[in-house]
Image (cartoon, rainbow, N blue to C red; front, side):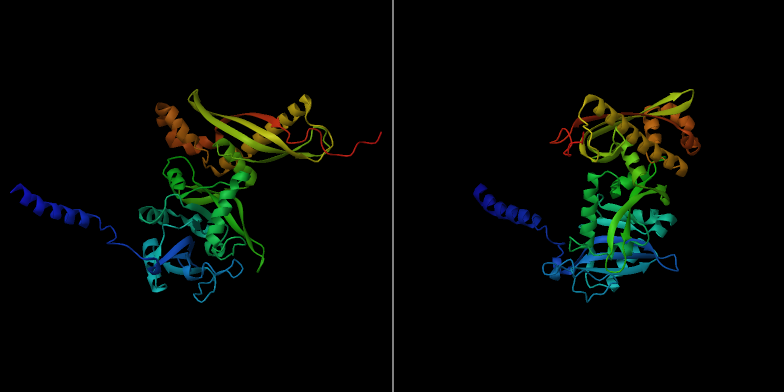
Length: 398
């Protein structure tokens, strides 16, 4: 009897387990997907509608096309390039995205999307509705790069990349390379939204612009967009941006150009290692912030003929570098206070360190921040001078 039960039950178990492994019931084959690599979101001309540009890979031509052949910036499906920029307008993000089904035979597929670019006019109006859709949609990657166009995002996606077949991939690579100079903020969707949800910390994003004219255009990162809640209110230049990065401990590398100790040339100093710490205190019921920056670097090159490896020369260079770093931080503080935007997260730091006192001042933070007392301490060190001690220069005439 037991043997008969075993003979009957075993095949049933195998059948049940087999049914549970059919994980492809909702599969979508590649030929029916429009793989999106970049998204641009603008305010439509002469209306309050949204205009969305989706950059779709033309998979059938990706291998054979070259960057010079390019893709159609105006949405022409007859382009011989490796991508297609297709546009659609609508009242909301959801309806506009769904409306692409009237323009393309393939359903847009977003998990491979590299970048989201907001046009400046839309950013000034507010982007909360757009962010709501992006966060709710299951296909959106929270680590997608987020940027603000100097003008229209569709113009950015229309500029051909000189090194990549897909412009969106070129923009993504461009942002990855920004760590070499640390003069540009790199923000992903989840980081932007985390700042947005803070009661005090202002959201930020890099600004990307089109440089040149006609067929000689290229893209460049030109500063940092500063938001108050979900609206663009101003921007920081590269010096101010690096000052911000010093404060929030996001300096990776970079070059600091200073005057030589003999004042007869310039010296370029490379940033090798940098760390910063923000501490807070409440003194006489007033908040106080202290920024402590420690940096180590090398001599990269010099245009003067003086030897810079003596102890006195090194000490002089370190002092000048201290001043240069402090100046960048002060420029960032000045711009942030002028915009009344706490891009540094000082309010959140006070909230965590002094929760009781914070309850008394949080409602007045917009009045307190522009007059906030901030102390800046910088300690910069020079560790190496490269393969040279003294400069490679002809001897001076006697």
